Image (cartoon, rainbow, N blue to C red):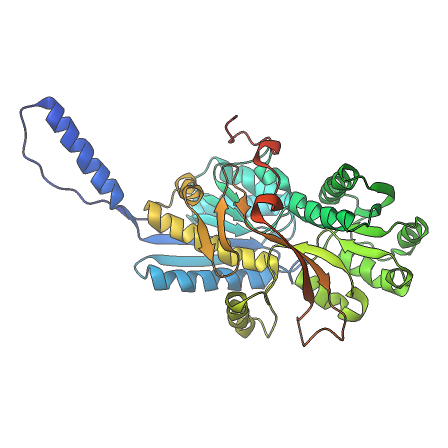
Length: 416
């Protein structure tokens, strides 16, 4: 699909004064730029369509992007928007190759979602020097807005700093000061553990032990026995998706939570709780940026989403795809451009507002800022039905929810 940008022109009569001629030309250029229009945009949802994050992203992310386009068309019916999709198979080489092909051969203007930090970092390097934008809602690594930040990227939804900081700070301040970490042995798990442990220690708590496990582990018994024997008040799960689901299920089998220890999942989404079931997940603490049953706006979106997803409710990642896509489209229309850096700069220039995340903003480093929420999983008796899983423990204000700008070491951030 071609990208067309139109600008109006006008005729002027020659004038004798060179200064007046130059001034008039400048005014015409400014007026033309102000009336520039983008008439067509192409979006690519690069996601996990077949792996263990397909429930929290996958086809639901594609549906969320299409719902955003549907809402944008009500505002700007004259702009044509096409959405395509691809499965990166959780492999950085496939993700980066797809991104490169989309940008150079298929004229994709923005790449959306991209769960898994390793894939997202690879895609970011492809997008960095291109004309495309990267609106990341699926990955967790805070490096996307830290040392590896890019002028083409906006990071929505969450990151490792926000998840670990939100959960650890609230629980330590509630008197749960002795922690044990059960950590997936790769960069994402290490980052979650490091961020949470830092908060625990800063607040006067103690890390009494920890153990690291391989990804896609089937048996967590030896790890959980170590955690149980540590007598920690909180067993923090610094892992994700299938590993989190399996560790929570097996912790219930060992009677860990019934024995007085709390489980805190440093990354867990609605789809994970659904896979575990309330009987085993009840009492679990987690931090999220979105919950479908928060207010009338989130519930209305969830109903639309469910109609296309066999009754399932959206996860935070899928909600981030919707909100990030809508914000990108509005910025492209306002800027009159499909150039990635231009559109991202426009996103940073003003506030964002949508029915899922409410009012927010995009910082200089590309981090979208919005409130985060500490939830506890309901008991079966507290739940009113399918996907009614969370009760709110604490709202973390937007100003406190994400890593301070000065601490990220993003090269785009100007020194004070």
